[in-house]
Image (cartoon, rainbow, N blue to C red):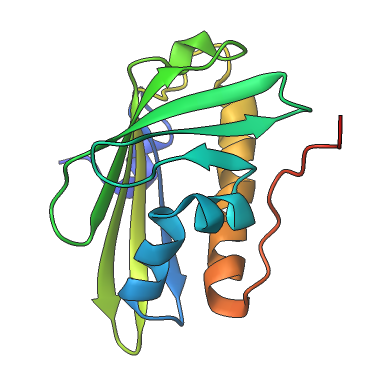
Length: 153
């Protein structure tokens, strides 16, 4: 069986586990509304409800990631990447957030299925997800994330 440590050194998907002092409901709320996603990841428009499609924009709207929200188990949020011009390797990949209660807070197991070291964007995406997952923890636990901010046009 592959351990989490082994995964970072093989062709496996990018994965991380994060802990929160806030309860699971608060973590899930940050993943299920455009306003929440905007506050930890980047400017978001559209519907983050199951069956919806939303867009997150970066770099003055030069990079726009279009995501479909998939049906998921309780405590889980699943997004499939529909389009992303600057990182086309992401198209068809799936981003999964599994959230569970842990003591007085929550634990998040994050996995970006298809984001592997073989992809050209892996190093940049690894750094990006590392930053934005820390931003998610900060946003949920303190109300202040470190999202991407697009400049006014």
